Amino acid sequence: MSLQLLFQGIGTLFMQEPKFAIARLVLIAIGLSFVYLGYKGVLEGLIMIPMGFGMAGVNAGVLYFESGINATADGTGTLFLNPLISDPGDLVNIMQIDFLQPVYTLMFSNALIACLVFMGVGVLADVSNVLRYPFTSMMIAMFAELGSVFTFPIAVWMGLDYGGAAAISIVGGADGPLVIFASLMLAPELFVPITVIAYLYLSLTYGGYPFMIRAMVPQELRGKAVKTARGTPISPGAKIAFDIIACVILSFLFPAAAPLLLSFFLGNAVKEAGLVKYTQMIENVFLYVSTFFLGLLLGVLCEASTILNPTVLLFLILGVIALGVSGAGGIIGGYVVYFMSHKNFNPVIGVAGVSCVPTTAKVAQYQVAHVNKRVNIIQYAMGANICGVITSAIITGIYITLVPLL
Image (cartoon, rainbow, N blue to C red; front, side, top):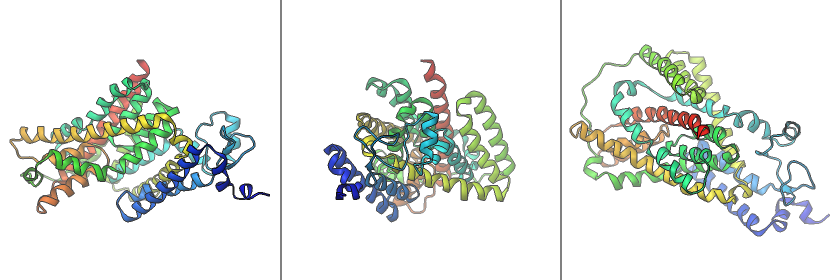
């Protein structure tokens, strides 16, 4: 028996096309760097560490297949999962072989994992700031959706069909579950590259948006305090009323997004109702299990053959446009509120309208505190952040409803 057959992970490097072999090695290196950066806290460890392990493991663990549903065109494959299997007979067989196939089939292909993550986000969210500052929060959130709208015609102009263009445009909302949901509904054949790129970019908002804030907002405005009168506390009953009314109205208007809307508002209502057992179950089990498998499977989906797809470069460009325009749009919305409130507002809050909860709100607060440690804008930022989640779900529902009609 040759060493090439005995150690097939290494042996397949020499029998594949050079571009695939090189891509595998590069992706392994990227996976290792994700684990390191996640451990150091530079990137979000909850996603990056399992994603890095998955990316490194799937590109190292390639072996030979004489035939079968696991094999690719060059006769190689893995025992992780095959996202393109749709035949019921093949699906039953491969679920008995590939160890992550049941998780992918039962949680990813039907968007269940997106709904579970959204339910967890609902438990973590506090809608009191939305109720306290409704006009400000919604104004900023609408401006922060510019990337989701602006990217669509650009994507169509660059050659994508309407479904693919809408799916990649949702990246502008910076909400991973919504990207998963939209891509599965509108462009299932592009689900893997769109979702992988979306989560790669969402994890980089920590690094990119601070530069945008410093470029668009002068230092004297970044450190500006917002003068507000002390308002009455928002009762849990008022929050629950908001949750159920908003859920029903938005589900009537945008039924395509109803599963996500229900998940988010139900999670928040459970927390506000004081249902401790359910709250702990959703936060400690649903959210973290879903986040773990989300990161792991996204890493496993980063096979060399997937990343070398020519459309990936297009998605990389469009993802940057979507997130960049949304961030800039949010800050522009912050300036609009600044002038409408007779300059009693901090424009940095605008970036929190991009609904990466709570990342963008934390980025806004950090940039303000870096200039003036005594200023706290987190309540405004979280209000815009939660409204960003709601407006992103609305945009997703509009795309899912209208795109099939075009």
